[in-house]
Length: 237
Image (cartoon, rainbow, N blue to C red; front, side, top):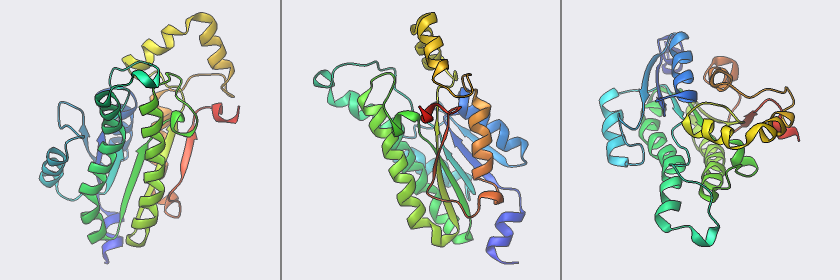
């Protein structure tokens, strides 16, 4: 049995970042239900913006078959005009979303290459394909950066049997930040947001988890470098 056959037939090891709540938690649960051994990572486990901490974490786990880069967010920030943005505020958001994705991807690819199989899924945002509803410049930019990183890694890693894909979620009530954002719109703003979604409902974390399940399955083995909007059709408008 070759390396590729061995990797696809045995129980797979998955790492999901940003599993404290919401989307990450749903992804972790879905992959575990599918029979994978799942390691969930949140900020209390390891600081994924710190390359040394990331390398130490993955060295302890060993071979990883599936990586889902879900960690990120707005780091508690709200919109300010760009001329008021401090260097450290910009850097913090870029680190949370884009640098963390780079750090974790770099840490797993050697073992994936050696076994000729791997699945990497990056969780971006509709903000990365359009604009941020919160108006946070670094968030939209870093989420767009994840999409570019996905394409580049798909090109680089494809010859080694590793696929790299991306999901751009729409509005999902998944954590305290999105709940606060939703509440800030008021009844009229909420109705307008839902009206802009083709299926006329907000997303739930499981909607995003289903997309991850597809991308890590053998059904998607000839799909790489792609970004799919899972947003109920909001991107159509």
